[in-house]
Length: 356
Image 1 (spheres, rainbow, N blue to C red):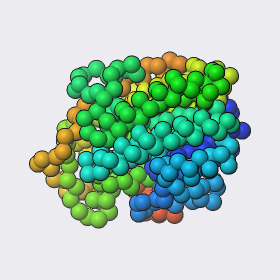
Image 2: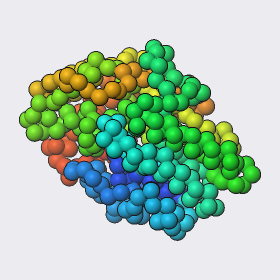
Image 3: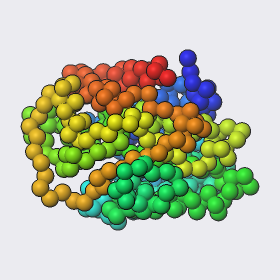
């Protein structure tokens, strides 16, 4: 049985930036499965394997390869599609890459967000925009309690700072061009972190690195093995994103045009070491090494998602152990049969929906 938010979205047109990425693939496949008309705008896939290509989405959605830093090209595509909603996922999402390429990171994450919002403001069909940032937008005090939406923003590394800067851009557009006066669309942000799940082939991420080590028979080098993270499945966030999008398109968008934390519900904190132990149990154990002098990175981040639970009735339906087991199963089955990527992914989407 379809969720109410799926019914609300079924007749909508959704423009998705970053559709060729990890989260974009899951989001577009879920949207298509409920009958949404989707247009994707992103750089060409830059990983091999490519989740986007394995899902065969290019045959089902309108898609243009382009850079959100090129405002004119992106505006032209949004104007041509005339969407009801925009899901802005495109980003430079890697912390360690942000140290190597800080200017590009700020350009994509902050200026690129401004481009999306400016285009949305000028295409009058757009009723709502959901911008995806990260749990790392919060000034990290390394404290034990979780961060709330009204806590101070900040960030020391270029990635975190660029996403906090994007939040400032978003706040400025929301205040300067209020939707209730017809000056722009309703705007929301969603802050989640450390998602895992099948189809992520990015560099310098724990699970893809684990998979590459297993498949290649190589050692896996770890940084901060005892750091805890709010592990959650990519479907938990996609689920929340679609609920917020439906709210922005509803008769009461003011209830949804705000910042939302979408953090894990499992109270058990798991370390990097814990995750790898369970992945190894579900599949194969590679040789593990430890990095001596890693670059600075936050040691603990947790989000208070009470707002999303109470207002959206959103919850993460799989606990941490199941999240890790489902992730291991996706990669195990994919490695055995790469052509089955789409069916594996759809099966996990449906399993998530049935657990609701």
